[in-house]
Image (cartoon, helix red, strand yellow):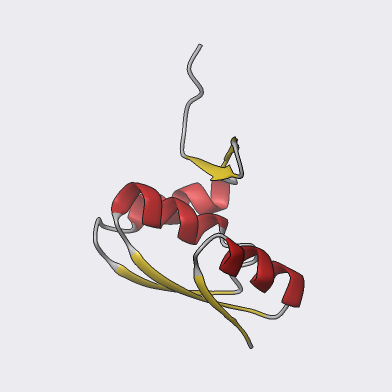
Amino acid sequence: NEPRGPWVSFGMTPIPLRPDLAAVAAAVPEGARVLDIGCGKGQLLAWLRDTKGVEGRGIELDAADVASAVGRGLAVVQG
């Protein structure tokens, strides 16, 4: 069986988006520009970038989460 719903890859392992993030992702049009405040490790931003061609930026308080998101090529700053 193929998995259903939106998935995001962390390393080599795809994991499903949380239901709240999937609901947000469904509302974002392809090619949109997004600012994700409180983006965590960037799961939503990565999914939007990889599947909808979204240009995204993120702001996150937790330094470890910022480092994780930046390490995956996302434009996330601590603030």
